[in-house]
Length: 218
Ligand SMILES: [Zn+2]
Image 1: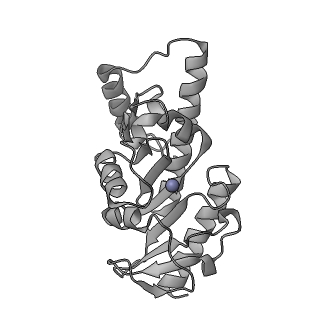
Image 2: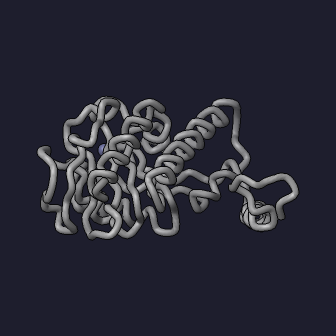
């Protein structure tokens, strides 16, 4: 299969999975990934019901955003995806818990050690109108050193070395935002301090945490 066809199919599959998980609702949200061996990017088209996304609903654009393949106009957040072209695959959602937190907080502190796989405290990018260069710049800055960011009064963005990682990061951020909300409903949450976070990173390195290991394997 051609690389472009393969990536279009993978972007569509990622969009359907995120819709199945409840992160992409109706036409809200978008997904993109670089096409290996090219400077091109496959990005979901505007107005597509993401739970029914197929390869024909994914458009191929060049680094300037010009359409080189596909029948449908790309997402209105194309500028955001292009501004993150060095970050691998990109997922943008209006997921319920992420958007809730993004309507209130200025950042998501580290409540659970799993958040460290996203890079630590998650920034909330200042509000700007959807589809603007200002929003793309705000989100790009919020993602510095992180695998995910929240967008004030809008939603979330997650990146990853491949689509699987970007989807996992979006799901983890959504879980963390729900965890924050539920914890806050019970009282004042405890957050992990810098020393606790450092110890988690050390332990993860010691135990090679995060991958499958056979019994007895070092
Ligand atoms: Zn949006």
